[in-house]
Length: 348
Image (cartoon, rainbow, N blue to C red; front, side, top):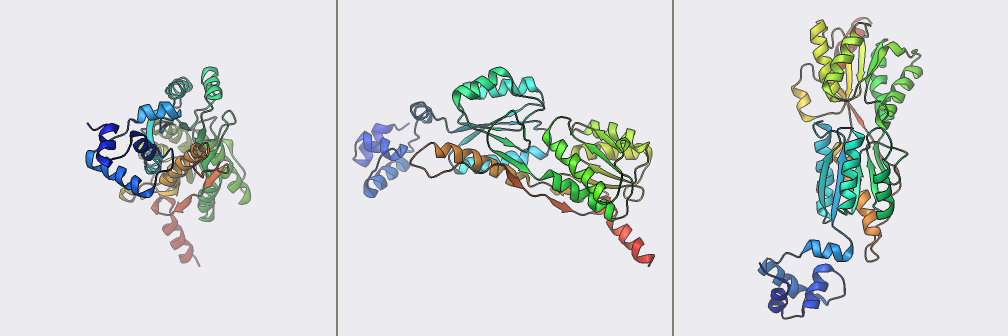
């Protein structure tokens, strides 16, 4: 494998010149720079990134902790992070906390001790444990909170306006004439669940509906909790459902089959998260779609902008916080839109 001396010999320049071009650490004339880069390409020279990182106190690595990589929401977010990071010369190390504070602390400590340049964190419910908090303080490692917001973590936040998304989804059901709209919410203690619940309650209030605690059940964003919540709620005869994520909607549909309740004939459904394969479902699900790929891109940019800001040769900047992306309502069959509009027209 070619080394820096081979490149210098091929380009007919000094080793210092090659180092300056490769590391962008000093001015080199365009002509010499062109010769060095041509030699690098010809010899297939790969710089020793670890040695360079030790010298600069940089690893060009980002750590990312997500709550559940088995949830189909997260791979597209990770793809957005990876693409954005790669475009700016960073690699990604990924961990899944399973919404467990002990695992989250373990990965945070591991990332910080391995000296990743920055961390993207989707926080589990609860605070930062003492050892990880101490490392964050001593290493000054930038953290960007992604999707969830916790007051126990300082730094930039990249979020989705879930309050507005929930409000729009529930309002759509109320506009169609449903009067007993129940909700399966997500994991207790995280900001996403609080925001989606706030949107649900505000929509009910604005449409003159009284909030009924019996029509609200908490899940944990997983399939089984949607099924369990569905079994409980269907006994209370809601005529429509707002479900805080796709996996719980899958569990709820299983409960519908068990009770032999039809959607949308007997009950309307709106859920959160949208995926290309939902067009293959019967009925096709009406969803509040969160921009997953864009969320990952924005989070990676926000983090790398902070890393670049520490280098006086670059022109990054500390991004404004929070960065909030919008959701979109995707209307399909499960909300009963076509049936209810047709019935309304027929009654005129």
